[in-house]
Length: 238
Image 1 (tube, helix red, strand yellow):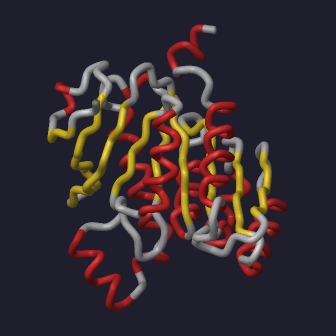
Image 2 (tube, rainbow, N blue to C red):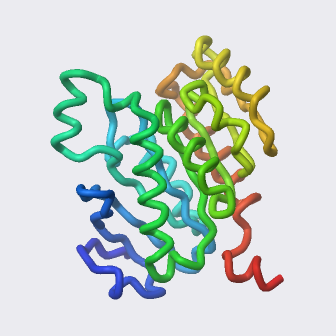
């Protein structure tokens, strides 16, 4: 049974478990939940959507599905509590993809400095505006990111960075989310990496319909397992 505890980096050796962490990002610290299953060979970093947080029930559902097959996960808040309060009033920070992608890169760099995560391959799972942040961050660090999955994403907000993404990218969209389908079809034309678009019949933007989120989790799980198959140290030695 996983234990929940606050801990420092030097305490997180190769021991499976769950930790509450604080991630330094410039002058602020971001709250996160880090889960390392026994024998994990990769870690998936989640970027939540607009108006959400690390507590997003949909992202936590997918993260749990990944943990069950041995994939480590990091869910963290892209905004501080103070910034969230501002965003509730103005709704401006949730669309600041430059800020959100910078936070994601900072969290990734922090993760790569922690043991044993420094040796794990990294993937991104982004939802809504968080998917844009994930794609921009992947373009900025092409050697470190091994795969990207977008759920109901806004890849249009990634703009010219789409052409710079090198990580295999899976775009998942609900069949009833017509505006977002169009945005993802246009993004497919700009991506120059291995890519796939999956449209889940009957699903709306939040995948609240029965069985639709389970299908998201299945597709994400298969994508990450296929593209994050080795630890970085094993891949470099082979």
